[in-house]
Length: 506
View 1: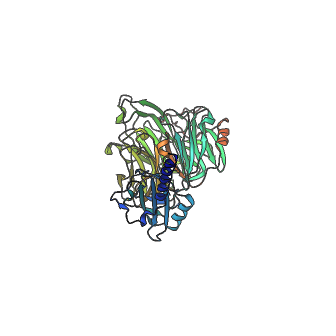
View 2 (view 1 turned 90 degrees about the vertical axis):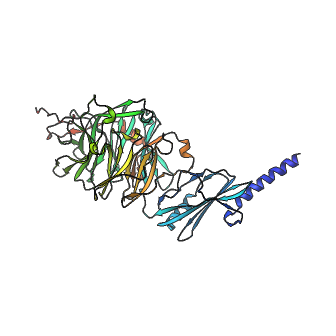
View 3 (view 1 turned 180 degrees about the vertical axis):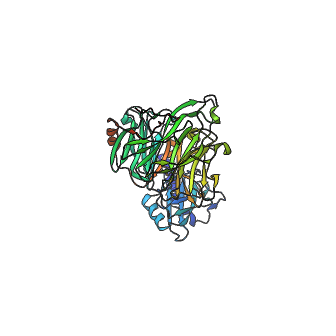
């Protein structure tokens, strides 16, 4: 009896080894199917940066052996992955060599699955394109739990997009579990960064040329500390909003959380002077928020809604896209102008971000409100300043598509989306070419099952060209120190208390 069991076990092992060692493409009895194999994540028909990490995936087809063949079209160079598991991992050095040798070329994926009872099956191939345009080496994001209103555990992280290396920048467990938010960079430069800490150890952390400062940006003339930031192209100024924000909870299962901006104005922080300034033109009785500069620094764009009225239903509030001229040398302002009127499009505009060449503005558009990451109606729209066109993008899903940033060369965007499961926010990459975007793909992970297992949200993705060198401990050390107070411009005769109240001069 024992001999029989041994023989059966040996036969099973030999059969499995035989299946794994087969070259299914050379077999006459391989059955070809007209459909593609189901894979997760969906990495089919996408454009890949030449410096991308491997696109590892799981084959969602039943089998006992798997064979994947990647073939470039021009050079017919191949990568072959054989596995007893449906998890397909590509060796990183082999992958990078393949991308470098075959950039600006298409690559075909042939997937074979073996079943002991029926042999090998070949699925219809799919094709990806390797772009010679690289993406910024790092993406910086916040990771937070599935319920955004709670932040017991959160942190800012940086991920190398050429590999799977992820490192924390700052962890709130080192800061008495304070809230960490609103990170922003000058010109994709990792050495010029700003972010806020709310709650314990509160303050604004400013990184300039390998030096860290902790600032108190709340003054007696501003309604709050600085909130949403935007670096001026000269690297010497940062525009911020100041806001009074609250949250409410709905019985609506589609949009369960509503964030209210009850008051907001814009300020500009001068780093060299350690001084905040504003103008009655950007600190009106209405709500000004989400600033962003044109690449030449001559205009400040922002989002605007009328003054908060508690008698008006929340889902009727919409934000227009505005702009105002600014002269950084003389600190003078033009007149506010409407760029896209919310009353005309019957939508709300948030998160305006310019392409580096200044030809396009990418925004998030939702049915209402100022905080689209909770709104299922949130989509990405592109405003083409050359042709004066405004359109919803082909890359949108039927779920939340929200915060976005451009790459340094303007060829890629990264944005946050809940399209995978409708619950958790993930980061997606898309290639941009002459006003059109390629099919987005989720940032690849070493473990193809990573996104099935992670119950955390990514948000506020920002692309940067190099690694942030500060450790979480060194940032926490600065964050626990006393703040350096920011001064309010004595030459400004208004405050930023949402209404441009005149200051009584002594």
